[in-house]
Image (cartoon, helix red, strand yellow):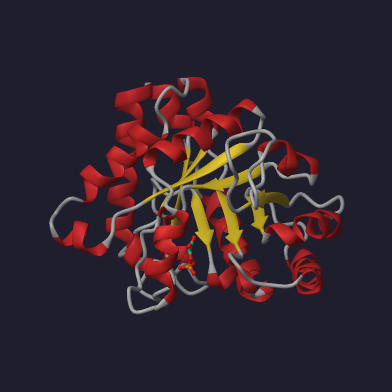
Amino acid sequence: MARIPMIAGNWKMNRTVGEAASLVKELLPRIQGVGGVEVVVCPPATALHVVQGALGGSDVALGAQDMFWADWGAFTGLLGPPMLLDVGCRYVIIGHSERRGRFGKPDESLKPEAARVFGDTDASVNLKVKAALRHGLVPIMCVGEMLPEREDGRTDEVVSGQIRAGLADVSPEAVAGIVLAYEPVWAIGTGMACDTLEANRVTAVIRKTVRDTFGADAAEGVRIQYGGSVTDQNAHDLISQPEIDGALVGGASLDACRFAQIIQVASVIAKNTRKS
Ligand code: PGA
């Protein structure tokens, strides 16, 4: 069966509640009738509820940017899976490099501090993935190498290790239904997207890791997005790669026009090619 490409917008720590609702209202008419592609928006937690309302009866799904693995309890500042379900989330991004404390722009003074604060590890990513699945949320699990790891020739080893550890103890059936995102850390927010053939190659490495660990059905079912400086300009080249099933978009998802163009590009590619 063909995999349906997914375009997800990660708004990160941007937009007030009012701005978030406006962004959705600008986006929806621009993608009306666009088919063959699944669209997800991941606003900040404060805007989840209002964005869900603004999405109304549209096909655009709601996603959160992170969550804790416990259901409820004394965990100041955190959100658990039942809370995300309560506001209508279907997806949750897990293990984004900015949560793992792996950053592509070391010059930003806040980021080394944040690295110590957030500190997601492969082990915590695995707990979050399993908690999401227990509750029927679909994880979008991010993996990707940092620049020194790439320069040392360790890209394949790093992403494979993240896949195996992040998905430990997950059933092959569940793996087939989740979403993975290959996000080379050095490409995130830098304007330097990964070369398309290289992005496709690493995505194939990820799929092979899934096949070797969970079997052919899981590998054929799992959707693997590319993320890292995706724009309306480079989306076609990236998304048309045979292994790449859509994009996780940061900066460009904050602009309704550009995000809609990326969605339209994915829709055209989906109609012209059958990936399975
Ligand atoms: P970017 O972010 O598109 O702004 O590079 C992508 C991401 O972090 O998912």
